[in-house]
Image (cartoon, rainbow, N blue to C red; front, side, top):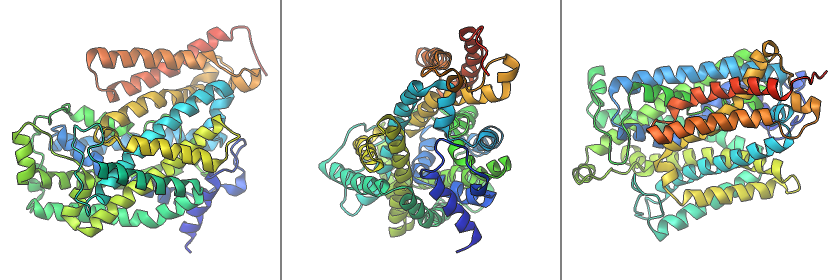
Length: 473
């Protein structure tokens, strides 16, 4: 086994349950190589097979997609490096323990519940992805872009079967999940590259101009979709993982890093998964859109399916089916495991096995409804919008707390269980900007950063107001 693999497996094993309520000791810190492998594997996964095609349904242009993704993903990497990794290596706490010190145990319980449920919905979308591949040999009717409910008994049976297998494996523990993902990730990356190469051939691309012209100046969005511009692409790709970077979830990962510079390793996953893989998957869909079936659907005012299984199968055959199953599987497994940990924090008397089974059951039920996968762009935007502002609490306390004159880790030092300054800051930021989104039909990714900044500033203000005269040592 190489030194690289030893370090990667070490950090994954440790992250499974040690040092949850203490600083990570110096002896357990890992080099940047461990994080390189983790992020490269995690971000070339099942979601990519759906997100790439969904971009085309929004009528995006070549410039907006290719350059917008380049910039948006760079902003995500910078967020991981200068916010998440910086704070993670300073304190070396998990997100949950760090929040508990600021918010109090009762407020963190509410956060865990929201986090766990959203994780389940995301895992459900990945079960849907795998089901579109498993259903090919059974001649299963694929879910349409506008489908929200199960469309056949075959679909229900396949989703339940996949969900049961994934849940049981996830319940076996983090080591099982991580080792499986390590073996499968190179296969998935190879499949994405192969799909892209084959799709370019099928599209008769002979030059960069031919490639650019696939999207050209863009088009009208498909029925039920909104039009994406350059800024839609930039902000959506920046905040696709908002909960992980500006939302601080990956504090739990970077607490094991020797240096904050390990945050740069996120670029490996982002530019393989969120750039190459998204564009490769979009190319697959571009091939399908030229088929008589897709053209007939468009002529009838209906949006063609973005089911990943058939798209990959049409490009690289059986290998495509296997890749889609594995991609959905490797994403859903750790996601269900994380949801189980969030639920266990609420019900500590239940074993990890059973809370993970519960999480897997919720995810499987969600997977029955194609809407979570078919509307993944909107769901991921909502997911980040809800959770990211909580990360602003940690960021603003760390960078501006002393200047603002507030007490760090106030809940821990005062003994309170519910920090009203935190809740009021999040509730007001979420409420105001979500109202703006609904009332004025503003895409949520445009409002994630304003809500995040607002939450951080309000936290500093409310902390001063609520704690006036209370100076703690």
